[in-house]
Image (cartoon, rainbow, N blue to C red):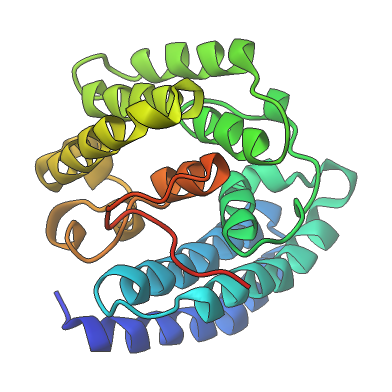
Length: 238
């Protein structure tokens, strides 16, 4: 793995390549899904830069979150043109945009249609929608049931993590310190977890676990107004 400072530069290069070569290839092949994958790739690159800056460098990560939104929508313009009326943000993990926008104190970027989502991203979509409105328990149940169907043993840590997220949403403020301690313990377990290991480094698997925070837990804490002592707390405001 590259040193953290070089990881930032590496992700910059990834974004440049994706927005040039990747989008050109999508346009040339008239592939909507290629353009969606490019938008998602750029989003994860910028989010990773933000998380690395946030936790490892202990610096204000907002510039990278702003870039995450702007670079994503640059790519989405191409995807939307190729997809036409069938183009949906949910084809490119759009729940992440809500989490990012919320941390930046920005309005919801668009209306998130949970009916278009499937597990495992659906459960994060429920959290993303809740940040700006109401909790949808029926969609949460549908999402969690779908996660278990992906393999009960394999998704055990994901399920435990998200059950803890839900408790953080509904528990009293007095209970949050204990729940955040549990969240930190669960996050550390991602190091050797195959389910999280299949995802991007933003999720804290393998060598990235002590370099990035749990940004979903951070968004929940911000929504609840919790200001405890945790590496997974958002500490920047306008």
